[in-house]
Structure formats: C-alpha cells, structure tokens
Image (cartoon, rainbow over all chains, first blue to last red; front, top):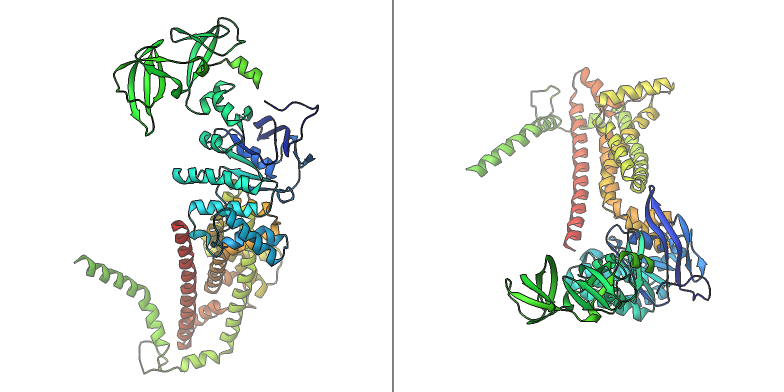
Length: 357
Length: 264
C-alpha cells in the first residue's frame, strides 16, 4: 500500500523523500514520503492547517523543505526556481491578471518563453478549447464568472505543457452545483491533456470523485495513501474514518477472530488479528445498517431528516447515537431494529492503525 | 420643505467657501488700482503680471521645483510602495504609520526641522534645498495614494507570474505597474499640487537666493496688495482647480474598475 523502500522501487514522476518543514519552530510537515506516477490524479486530502498547501507549495517551488528531497523524473529539484521545474500551479484564488484579457493571461508564459506569435496563437486556442472556452480570447477577466475564471487559470497553466499540474483547492470558491460540474470537467481535462495532477482539498467528496490515489494528511503526517475506494471502505485509523465521510465510530470488544461485540450484542465480522478481548473501535457507515422488524440491535428513532435521495435518522441504541441512512421512510419517535452484515463491520484500534501507517 | 432647506444650506456653505476667491478673481479684472472701488473691466493687471520679472522668476522656481520634486518623489514613492508590497505585514504597517508623519506634522515644524537639518550639514540654501524638502513631503503623499491601489493586488499574482517564468523586473513591469498606474498618476498630480501649494516649508528651506510664487506673494502682500497679485492668485487658483479636477477624474475611473470587478 505504501511505497516499498529502496530495492527495485519503480520510479515515480514526482517523489518526496523524508520531507519535513517547520515555520517559526512549529512543525508543519513530518517525514512525508510518497510518489506520484505519470498521468495520475493524486489528491492530498486533509483539514485546514494540516500542511497540505505547504506540501503543494514545496512541490511547486514556492517553499523549500527543511529536510528531505523532492525528485522530478528522478532528478532532485530542491532549490530549483518555480519556472524551471516543468511544474505549474493553479492557485486557490485563480490569481489571473485582471488588467489583461483572457488571451493575454494565457499567453503570458509563452510570450516570456519568446515563442513565435503563430505558435502562441495556436497554443492559446488549443488550451481554450481544452477548457471549453473557445472564443473567449478577447473577454476581460472581470467579465468572467467564477467557473470561467477557474478554467482560464487552468488553461494558463496547461499551456506551459507542464509534466505536473498542481491545484490548490481550485473549486473552493465556487457554488456547489458549479463545483460538481467542474469536478467532472477537471477529471476530463486531466485525461485529455495526459498530465499528472496533484490536487489539494479539504473536501472528501471531491477527493473521492476525481482521484486515482488519495493521501490523507493530518497534523503534518500522512495518515493513509490509497485508492479512493479503500480510503472510503478501509480507513486505517480513526482520523481517516472520521474525516472521510460520515461514520459511526462505536466502542466495542474484539472477542476473537471474526467475532466482535458492541452495543450489547455479538456480531460476525471479517476482521482478524486483534488481541482477544481487547477494546476496539467499530466503524459502520450510515448506509450499511439494515433496518427492520427484527435485528440484533433495538433502537429508538430520535429524529428523521429528509435529504433528497435518503432519509437520515438519528437512532439511539443503548446510550449511543447512531447516524443511519435509509431510503425507507421512518418517523421520529418510533422504535426500530438494526442489523449489520459482517462485511460492513470494520474493526480498528489506534495501535493497529499506527502499525499500518 | 426639507429639500429646499438643504439646498440653501449647501449653497450658503459653498458661497461662504468660494466668495472670497470670487471677489479676488473679480478684482483681478478691475481697472482701478484700489480695492473696494470698481472702475470697469480691464486685463491690464494680467499684462502687468506677465511683464513682471520678479514674478516670472518666482514662477520658474515654483514650477521647476514642483516638476522635479514630482518626478523624483513619484519614482521614490512607487519604488517604496513596491518594496512595501513585498514586505511582511508588520513592517508594512509600521512604515505606513511612519509615512503619515510628514503629512500630519505641522508644516511649520517640518519646515524648521528641515532648515536646521540643512544648516547642520552646511548646505547652501536655494533651489536644491527647497527641492529636497519638497521631495520629502511629496514622497509621503505618493505612497499614501499608491499603496491602497497596490494592496488590491493579490500577492498570489506575483507567484503565478513567477510560476510562468517571469523574473522580478517582468513582474514589476507587466503585473504590478499596469495595475497601479492610475494610483501613480493620481499620486504624482497630488504631489505636484502639494508642491505648488506649499508656502511654509518652502519659506524655511529656500533661503533668500530662491523665491517661489508663494514666497513672492507673501512678501508682496506685506508691502500692500497690488492688483496684479489678484491676477496671479486667480491664475494659480484656476490651475489648482484643474489639477484637482483631473485627480478626481482618475479616482472616479478607478472606482469604476473596482465596481466592474465586483460585478464580474
């Protein structure tokens, strides 16, 4: 799951080795190691202040690590200035030049490269086509909507033909509807352009939707590196379980392999290898409860909220509030039975989680 | 009832502000040599003004100092503003506070301290000392006008430009200056106006070798106001009004841009 050290390691396009960084003596990033492959869409996911933007800025060349090495194509790029890296960045607030029109914004880097007017024209046109803004050349930046500005910022970076495109929460300023559209478009652009994307966000939905690989970062340390599927279904520790999606985290006891007890009942599970009779955390997703006339757990529906596709219930079992999602209609104040199949029970201990990381 | 009252009040206020100047302007066209007696329309005082060598020399000092001080102070002020743009917030704050000192400090104190400063360094009083003094207070005005425009630039634009291959000169020339040029122009015009307007600081730093218009008028006034002084004052007033008109127009177009951005 996490890259194997030294022997016969396949070289990634971008590799970070033992990166650490502190600001004013306060550690921001601790021993970060990961690699990104060509054409991969990697997302660094974490709460604000976890160090994800600093990490991105180091790859972009706007910050230098205190220790550790960053490789691009196997070459160390520590100390190399941003524009000598063949990496370009799409900034959080787009950072378009407001005194230039769309064309001049996108052509800015190409003009500095002293490319011919003909080449620049063609490249700008192609870039605009890639971000579905053909014909916008003469528009002023101020006349564009947020989503359009975002796409110009992407075009301005892509036109430089970077090997890696860094994106720092590029959708955070857009409204929800536009964000969902842009998520799909970004993924399409990444595939079409054939460029490696490193994407930073605090939005787990964004991370799961677009990425080939997700890094969950908290307090400057990597919690888990995995596919979106595994991040969602197999969180390695409580933080990931809690941060990625809504989860019920329930105190339980690991009886023996394949058996765990919580909320006063015993369940079969798929987990093995924990200490017998040890205290564990049991993770169950809200949509994984089976509600009905019978079941191992009996609960009382405290509240029921209609959320469009599903009803979200808060069910009190013993003294624990569980969040339950169901497509069936339930009324607050009634009693209900709950059950879970072994596959949907996920057992965690902090100790085991640490081992995995 | 409220509206006419409001109009009368505002009208009265404006009249109070401008009446003295209007009287002065009217008397500059008076054929009589004496104040308080109207003897018909005449341009003779304007003629006398333009043939007065003393006034011509004073005009040369005033415009020469104002032009040079404006150019030099604008250059220094813009460079300082760019420097502040790159500085840490704390440094920026302290420098901006210090920058207000020449503006809020009474001219008399600025004038006397500059005079003592020049005496201390045994400077030869004249055009150059007056110029230096004007540059000093003009820089403060340029920075005050340029900085707000500068702060509208998101610093990430600088990083974006760097990312696209721009060096510091390209960033200043193509990213920063185009976005602050209205502020620079407004700052320069304000500096020019302030320089022409100044009497007190000039008085203490010019010595007796250089006499600009304000000093000349002051010394003439002590000998009794000659009508050509009215003519001169009228011309200066019109000049300043035109300058202020231009400054306001620049500021207005600046506002239009901001509104445009908000809508976008």
